[in-house]
Length: 361
Image (tube, rainbow, N blue to C red; front, side):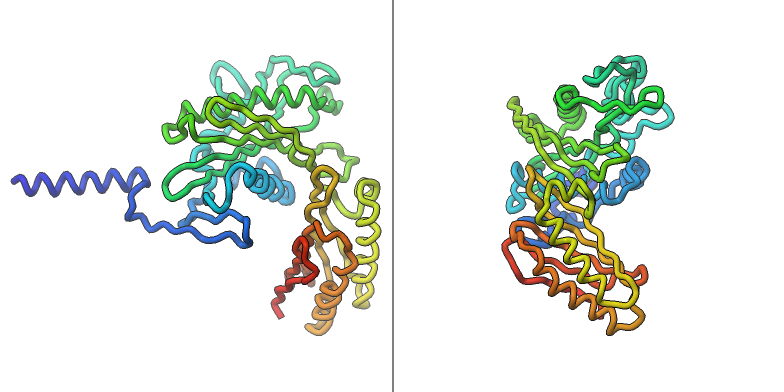
């Protein structure tokens, strides 16, 4: 009889262990980052139910990519990729964030029925620095990265997508930097307090980074915005840092004014690539700029080759012509598509003249 009870107890403990997700028998592994200094993913990968919500909130895939990859880059200052690996949205899932149909999500407005809403209440006045408005939607989306060493939570990074302006009676009103910063400081503290109180795993000694990505809503601008502010919470200590980051469309007047030398080199590169085939080959790019320095240039080349030999000529030409860019502190990534199909990826890393090529031919 005692043996049966012991067996039942053991089975019960194993079931509890599996339910909590911390059992050592769980088939879990970590894969290395693509490059040295990248975070490795924890597998099996737990797909967040926020994936569809992110697409609905921000339709531009470039901005969504920049928001999440930029959050990873900022996190490396606080959470070393050599010490931790990443998961996503372990805590803030769809139900925690959703604000549609009057739900109580964090992305909703502050009201009696939603005391945790991050956006101002509908009747609440907000001083933009350029005029007072009521109930603006300032937080558009929220991304979460969770850093683990084994089963131990070592840190969390939260990326906020915030509007750079609000609409009032059809008029676009920009939010002054000092007003935005005051709002972000208040909001970051609220998020951290909420997570520490809501989830037992997030103890006070688990550091949390909150970073704000300001969306550029000016239709006349060639900027897609970028991260402007971080706040790092470790225990009771808080470190606030202003960030000057921006993603610019290339070619554009703004990019030429900020980066005249690289703009000229891009024009030469673009011209060279366009002459390889009799059908026009188009070249565009986006530049990630931080504190006035171009960190990465993502180039997209659209070709219309009719034969393998034609597209191979384009790939080989691009590989050679990347030498036209003289800045070795910048990373160059090139995607070549032919008639709508991706056919090659090229990369020239920082401090390196060699070009890595991955082609389907």
